[in-house]
Image 1 (cartoon, helix red, strand yellow):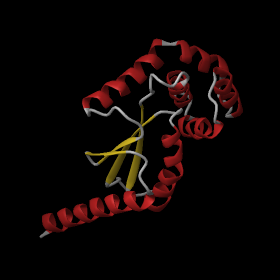
Image 2: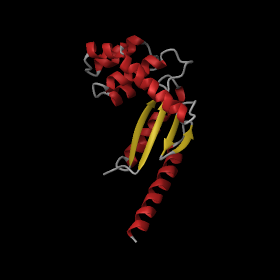
Image 3: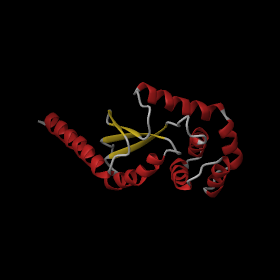
Image 4: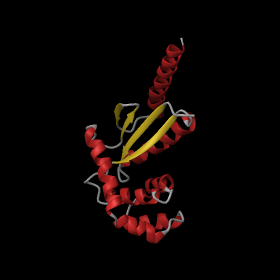
Length: 166
C-alpha cells in the first residue's frame, strides 16, 4: 500500500529536542505504519561540534542498509564522538573499511549539503522541523498533535477519493 501521509523530518543528532521527539515518531509509525512514510533529512547545527560528523556517519551506515538502526543508536548514545560512531557501526555489523572510507568521502559530505539546501529552500532553520504533506511544522510536537494532522490528511484523502469515484 502506498502511504497517504509523508512526514519529512529535519533533524540534528545533537539536538536534545530532536532526541525527545523520537519516541513520538516511533509511536506515529506504529499506529499509522501503512498510511505514513517517514523521511529523514539531516540538518546539523553549526553550534553542535559533532553534529555534521554524526550526520555523515548515519549516511554512511545507510549506505550499508543500517541507517535507521544507526539513527536510533546515535540518539540513544548521549555524547557523540568519532569513537562513538565507530563503536555503533561495529556493533551493527557494518563493514568498517567501507564505513570509514565513506566518512571521508565527498559523497557523504555532498549528501548532507543536499539536505541542508533542501532545508534552506523551505526556510527551515531549526530542529526538529517537519513537513507533513507539504505543510511545515516546527518543534517537537506531541503524538496527539501528529495524530490530529495525520487524521486530517487521511480524512482529506478519503474525501478526495470519494469525490473522484462519484
